[in-house]
Amino acid sequence: MKGKISIPRIFIYLFLIVASFLSIFPFFWMTTGMTNSAVDIVRGKMTFGTMFFENIRILFSEYDMALVLFNSIKVTGLTVVLCLLICSMAAYGFVMYKSKITQRLYALTMLTMMIPFAALMIPLFQIIVQFKLLNSHFALIITGASSVFIIFFFRQSFVTYPFEIIQAARVDGAGEFRIFFKIFAPSMKSTFFAAAIYAFMTSWNSYMWPLIVLQTNDKRTTTLLISYLSSAYVPQYGVIMTAIVISTLPIIIIFFAFQKQFVQGMLGSLKA
Amino acid sequence: MLAPLIFFDYLTQSIIDWGIIMERKLKKYGLIFIAVAMILLALFMFYPVLYSFYLSLTSTKLGKTDFVWFANYKRILTDPLFWTSLKNTFVILLIQVPVMLFLALILATILNDKSIKFRGFFRTALFLPAVTSLIAYTILFKMLFSYTGLLNTTLMRINLISEPIEWMSNPITAKAVLIIAMIWRWTGYNMVFYLSGMQNISEDIYEAASIDGASKIKSFFMITLPLLKPMILFTTIMSTIGTLQLFDEPMNLSQGGVTAATIGPSNSLLTLSVYIYNLSFKYVPNFGYGATVAYVIVILIGILTLIQFRVGATDDEKEARKLKKQNRREKRRA
Image (cartoon, rainbow over all chains, first blue to last red):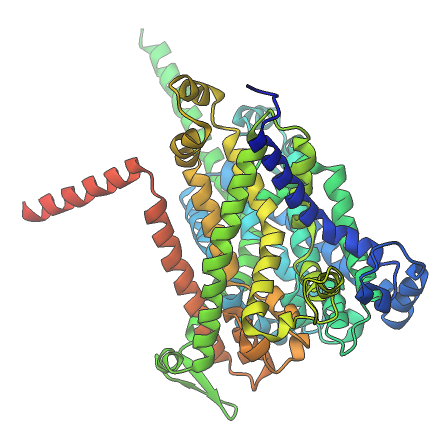
């Protein structure tokens, strides 16, 4: 039976091919769009054009794409580093030093996992105003530095760590922080990597919170710029496509370079 | 004779003492390790959740904030824009989530079949949309479906239509575009969840079923679906939570973006989250009423999650719940 080409088989392949085509097509479209003018894109031109450098020029000179990219990289980079440090330490604390207080705090933390951002938005905005952090990147970094989901993600994989190794290190006289940084963390590289990808995606793609916090053009991030470009009365399609490609490219590169960890990070589990 | 025993006793006691001291020290370390995260969460999560509820009981008029108890919650009942946003959110939820999860399940079932060729390629291609940012894919779809967009030009070129269709000017088609875009973005993502769930189902079960004469379709319904139930439940809950918070997509799909007067033609893309944003940051700020609508989302998520847990419970869990109820009843009688 197996391996033979039957009629249902053909339909299955046809279905897969159509679905894959629909999935990939927008990527192809934005890549060719990047090299065409708005008029050509509207006309439905699907081949590569010659407008690539012109689009790049407009993006970088008129909309200061270099600064926007720098802003995004700065915010995302600092958020990811801080988030990994703070959340991994918290998860380690929850797993390795079980006491009544830590267990209760963990339960409380997990309870907030399903709270929608909309319910936090207004008080968060008021806190940021109080601290005089409005229109600053620090406001984005500090609020993204502690993520309930990433604490949960770390804990899930930390619980399987052999406790004996930590005990042995203690007997040898290693301090608690040295055990964490020198022994524990290096052996958990793939977990950290998957969490980093999740944190990166969340921060790089965030839109609502930057929209509320950042108010001047010199502070805006890539998502805000793309949104701004597309809301113009006469949208410059070629320029928008270029901006979309530039903002998506880092994620696509990470995806193809580290597919396995990427999927793990996106799904928030180590089972994928 | 007694000396060694006393010595032994002394030894064990001092080991226990040392253990207690160590335990206390370790407890202190536990708090140090979680301290930074807890301070940040207290400030940016626990406090806002509670303060948001307090806000929902207040109202600001002419710069003066009054405590109004549940007046805001009463106001919601007669607020037409609230009902529009609630209706829109639920229409999107009830169409998009089932269609997407059904497609994801079919694709996962096909790709789990080891005799299919190029499985790796198909899986990668179908997952690829999940790498795009919410803004990027929304704007791509907006361009695709615009009046002079690629879809209209293509349809006209192959003579399927004689005049461009105004997809984004009609409330129904505008909503359809949003749903199609969301299906494009999230189907592959959910498919990977199902694939990872299917990998945990042993091949032997299927073989035994096929020896017993079960067809592929029958074994899908009798084996795959029941064993995948926890995963289906999980994806349903996650998608529901995500859809109830829908913001980036409707905001950017609507003509004019953030500054637009209505979100989509006759507010057909106004979702709950967009409405909260408008109440708090676009109109004259009314944080109290915005927080009230936000708490409606919290309550909805709570209720829907509870329902989904009930529906998605395995037979064992249902049995356990029944027993618990019975026990309680008997206790009350006794």
